[in-house]
Image (cartoon, rainbow, N blue to C red; front, top):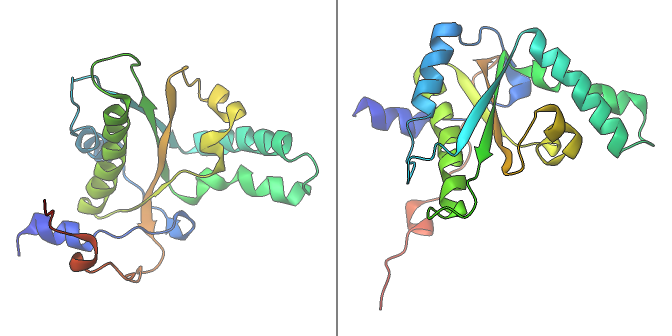
Length: 189
């Protein structure tokens, strides 16, 4: 079988909590990102950007998550907030894909958002092609204003996804996939 098709047919998400070192090194991560941004981009707007979290940056961002969680859930036990402190430390590398919309442009906002989603998918595929495992998550904090402020998101920016990249601690099992005949229909006038 064609290697590209084999890659696509074997791509599988691995839960971030089941990831471990090693993650991609600097050169591998650069390649993953370069592949990630080769997406359809009607109008050549580049309606996305990427924030990297590695090493101690993951723990530092955990402090932001703890503060945001406590602000939103002041009555929750301290132990619950502590879970947020290590959330990004589950994987060696985490990439936040930011959807960056140009409002009022001739390219519809929906197409701009889809381009950011395509970046997320390409990052997953590139990670898989390089022998790593990845998971695309959004999580509660993608929609939190305190977190958006800490990430310095602009007025027309929002999180498209958090891409966790690392090595799997165990071989992931395949999940059921829909049959092609269940998701494809012929259009009839």
